[in-house]
Structure formats: structure tokens, C-alpha cells
Image (cartoon, rainbow, N blue to C red):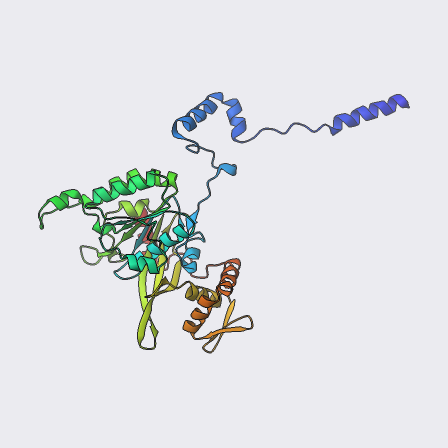
Length: 376
């Protein structure tokens, strides 16, 4: 009986011994292919850590962003704002709010302890307006280049420094090639600016991705030459390169005026994400832009709060829980400006509720065709 018991214990010990877990994934491949392991080590040594990596696992890169100052626009962009390490194009008609949005991004980057730079190719930067938007002028880097080539070289040097969080180029249309500047007015310079942009995009893209700098190109719009054509009659100057290399393209339009009595105090702005490689595209965000301090954060969360039923409206009165916060949007906005903690609570509730509430996908076949054309 004792011998029998001993055998049973031995068998149990054999059963308790867990088999070794098989090595899977890249580790198993490297064991089978030592030459590949050596090659990967040489690549990382020569080109730096992260120059090559497996797509899965913990090494997968997370895209970070910088807020635009508008919660509705941040949510339309995927919840992170404008992505770092990417090229962004912000375009639209004159006085639509393009530069104001870019300056808000600079202010948000500075609030997080970062450095912002503006390449003022239009020679039209207004420091007093930047200060009203929250930009710290003492740490803001501003360059007013004399040519398009100089602007792109300065941008490249700032990006490669790995010390700047956001660079704004205002605007693409003002990036005049040196050859055109040295020529006479009336001379033909077909394709010079498009060539400049194409060369710049090829050089900048990799450096921007490695540096985690958000590079924002502000662009104007033009009418397409040739009369009637399929889709939108509008296009942007600078050729196709920027459309192709940009990870995010934001179309900014002014859709209405904001009045306090008879006085115009701001404008209603509509932004459409016509291209987005880091989140779903074709989303739309609308918000108020005031003539005193730019994007109205408080007005934005009032609109989103109503959409998510976090705020309620009875007649002209706005209500949060059991508290009446104002009769009319302007008074509700002022209440939230004075009660920052309440505004913060509403913002957190909006984000927790899911954030974006607008339409998804292209609004027409023409819009979808234009998006495909921009990437082709």
C-alpha cells in the first residue's frame, strides 16, 4: 500500500509541473533569425531608438495632441485636438478665424509649458490680439521671413531642434519663392510655389514626426481656373503637396454674426474636418468667436451641454441641475466665466457623456470625391 501511495504522489508531481509557455511574436522570430536581431540592433544604433519597431504590443506609439481652445472642435478632431508630429492645414475665406484658431493652439501649448513659434509670412501678426487670446508674448517666437525658402528653412530648423511644440506658418499664399521676388512684376512664374511646397513637405514630414511638433499651415482659398467643374469651385494655393502630406485639414467658415443689442460682438464659426488621418473625418464643429477674446469656451460648453442634456433651457433661461445660470446665452456665458468650477464640472460631464454630437461621414458624393482627390 505504501509503494502504491508513493507512485501516486510521483504521478501527481509530474502532473503539477506546468509545461513551458511557448515563445511567440517577434521574440520567437528573433530566436530563429539571429541575423534579423543583429540588423535591428544596428538600425537602432545608427538611426536612434524607435526608428524601427513591431506594430503591436507596448511599443505602439500613442498620438498626442494640443487643444484648439474649442471643446467642440477638439471633439470633432477625435478628442485630442490637433495631433503632434503631424502637418495640419487650416484654410478658409478671409476673416473667418483661421489665425485666431492657430493662436489659441499656441496659447494652449504655452499653458502646458511648451514653446510656440509663428512664421509670419504675411507680416501681419498683431501682438495685442495674441495677448487677448492668452498667448504669452515673452516666450512666443516670431519670424518674418523675406522669402518662401527662408520661411521653410527656419521651420525646418525649429522642428529639428526638438524643443518647439507648435509652429504656425501664416500663410501658404504669402510664401513667395525667391526667384519670383527677384523678378519683375508681371513676369510668369508658373509652378514655383508648388515646387517649393513639394520640396518642403518631403524634407519636413519625417523631422516633424520624430520631433512631435505640430506644424500648422494657414491657407487661403482661390477660385478654380476654367469655370465650371465637378465638386467645389474653390481650391487652395500652393499645389497638391500640402493636401497630400497634411494629416488633418480644417475648413473654417464664418456663418453668422453675434450681437448684443445692435452691436456686433462676435461671429459664429463653422469648421469642417475635410481630412483626418488620426480620427474619423468629415466631422463638423460650430462655436462662437468673440471680438474681445477669441473662441468662447463658455459659449461652446453651453451648446454642447444643451446637446447632451446636461444643461436645460426653459424659454430664454439656461439651467444646470437646479441652478438657473442666466437669461439668454450672453448672461449664461458671463455666469460661467465668473464660476470656473461650474464650467469645469459641465465640461467633464460633456466629455464623460461621449463628447461629439454632430454628423459623421461626407455630406455629399461631391465631398467624398474631393477627399479622395486630395489624397490622390
